[in-house]
Length: 260
DNA sequence: GGCTTGTCAGATTC
DNA sequence: AGAATCTGACAAGC
Image 1: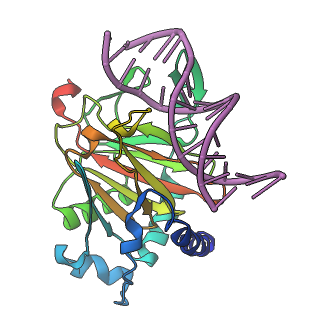
Image 2: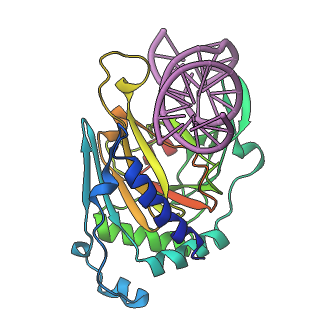
């Protein structure tokens, strides 16, 4: 159970040195403030208020994100175990995607949960999300406490090790409520999360916009606020040195309009 | 029609 | 100098 934690800190210190010379902006270097308060997981939820959370703002040209530790290590450990036990991922047709005329198995596992009555389009078919289960409700409630936002839908991605990944994309589905924030909550292995500005793609000579790297730690929350997703792609690249799984939940708001 | 999402190949990094 | 990482090409379909 502690395996990924050890790997995480080892990888982090190594990367911290390497990043001194790399071109990308690494916001985690600014974020080595330890959580000093010793807290009991059971008492936590009771006495927590929104001002408990320490936020770090991540900003670049039209990129506007906020990062915080949403759960203590003990809480996150419990939640991760429950997610691994209770979440049932898509398989078969629903775990494939068509790209340039070819079918591929997606290099990760995914599934959607959400409010009853919602619909969304995925892989060309219209589906209803699975109904909420307790562990997801728990995360959702903590999110509401920390951010003041409520969400009606969550996309869950599971990366079994550093070979599982997701390519560059924007979360700009038509079904999303316009300008609503997306909350990305992570459990398990720490992975690099890379933002890249759309004008920094291809050999555009006027592209001096550096990619932005964030390490998404066990129990962390990354809020992606408008208009980040209009201008910035993001990806979770392969990391050969990661051998343990990561589960990521991106909470969103899907408009009922598109759900008729 | 502009944009996609995965893999692969070649370049680059360390 | 080999492995990991980065980056663009792909030219099909919505």
